[in-house]
Image (cartoon, rainbow, N blue to C red; front, side):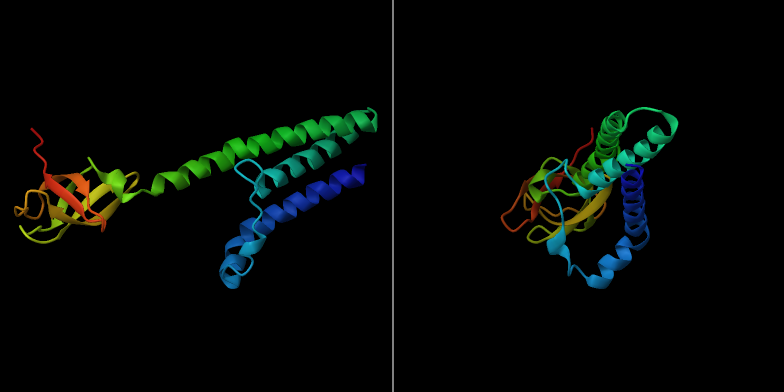
Length: 177
């Protein structure tokens, strides 16, 4: 049984090292050639979670075998439980926060209705200009027209009123008082 635990631990550590050290290099070298091999079985069952559980199982098995003088079946059961705990922790500590971080950087243009911003390229009465809006942790520049068909000079604070079919924002000057 000790060999099984060592194999699980070594496979997990080698996978982690290869992923950390060579992951980006291999990905850019192959340029998505192996994307069809992507193993993503929903939100919870991911390779990182599985490898975390495998490392936890292997490490716990080695330690428990050498420290506790218990039957192998008991050590196996305890190792499985510890491996499961490691997998759950990998999901809660790494995967879930990364998913939230990915979701915060994306937005739909329709989501911008009601957002305040600033004109960075003057908006003529009959035409388009450009506005800068703060979205999440970053900023976005968008094409905009005046909803009232009046000129809006550079530097004026605006608010997005509507979004056209082509993605153009319709804005109006924002009175902060």
